[in-house]
Length: 75
Image 1 (cartoon, helix red, strand yellow):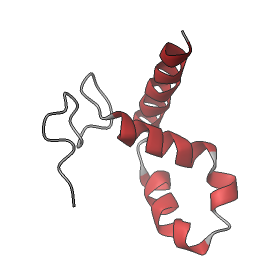
Image 2 (cartoon, rainbow, N blue to C red):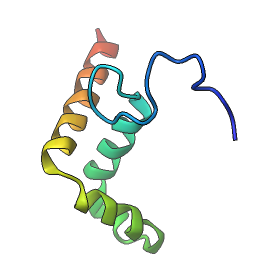
Image 3 (cartoon, rainbow, N blue to C red):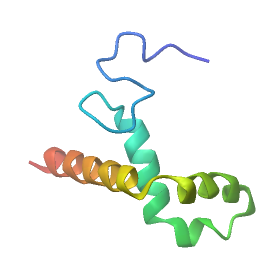
Image 4 (cartoon, helix red, strand yellow):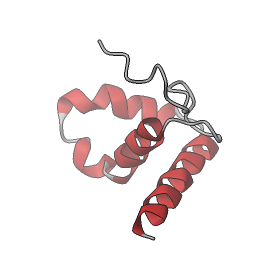
């Protein structure tokens, strides 16, 4: 659809690590934090199913990245 990522320093396929794309970890962090509200929306069940299948350690790393990123922006 677009090629915004072509010259980006982040890897859009990485969810964790130093080159992880912020859109990836913010996306999964958002879904995890709002899972209770989102599960009432039928179309979200497929995506939330992927969230439930995710390794809990990887999800925790993504949530930590999201928290750190938000804290940096407040400074």
